[in-house]
Image (cartoon, rainbow, N blue to C red; front, side, top):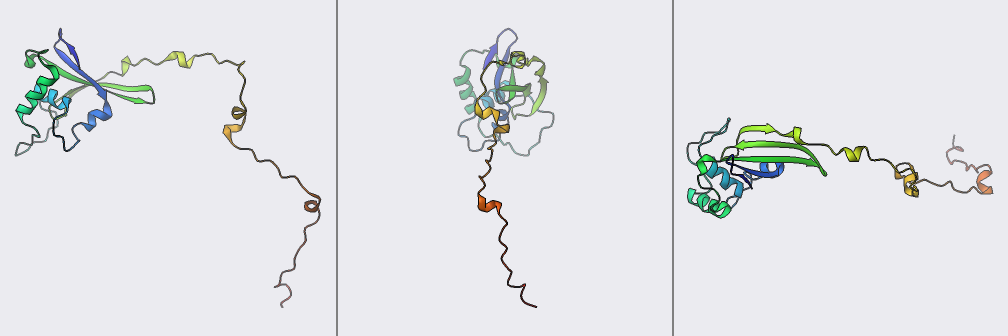
Length: 175
């Protein structure tokens, strides 16, 4: 959790996969820290496409959320109503960052606002323009085409060069 006391913003940074998995996990005995902070920071917010229910479907009571928030932030934040919480979610492929998005979420993990931060991803040009060392020895494995095994021809014998013996077929004599 990153706290910006000048602008009164709090930020969580996590992967997109983890963000999507938090509200789906069943059987929690204690709320996830992001569930707690969203519930307490954004109490009055509702997502654009929010499903209405006839009966309350809260998994945890307000007391549980308040106790958990006290454990998470302690006395670092005095007035929660003045603060906003943003979630920065990223995706990566291998060790390359592919997308970064900033979300403003409701307590039910519904998107209220989002901003694409992909402009801040800077590619590693040093890996692209790195000079190739042509003096390095090439190993035997690299010389084969795509690492395929080459089959060696079987040595021919004198018997193999002679005319093949044709055995008569038993059906040739019938008829």
